[in-house]
Image (cartoon, rainbow, N blue to C red; front, side, top):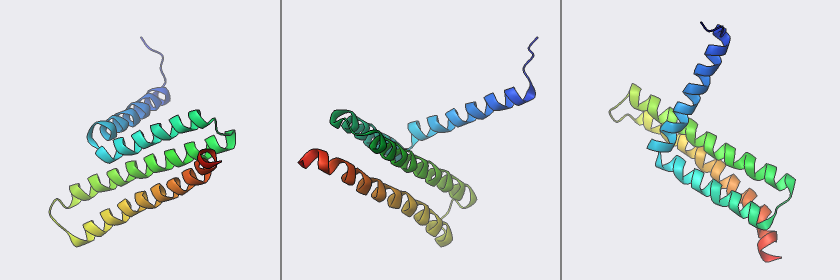
Length: 123
């Protein structure tokens, strides 16, 4: 007989659901895998150039933001496809806005990366 509390079981279910979502993203979403690959390359560059702690923080935050934006975009797309499987101009706009948010975060991450890595590359 287990003595697990309902809260503990609920917490474990939450983690199980979260890991399931990450598995869906990794297995089914090409863009998520692309961003994950770019993040891994960036981490490799951080190790290679031996960047400062504050630079590590900035890089890791930007990688996390890009991955989270892509995950939220995917969730929005899934909801939109469930609500309206057929073409719908309003659904298209919603998807475009969500995709634009990912692009915006990715551009800012690129700029942060340039600010951090250009001095290591050219100086």
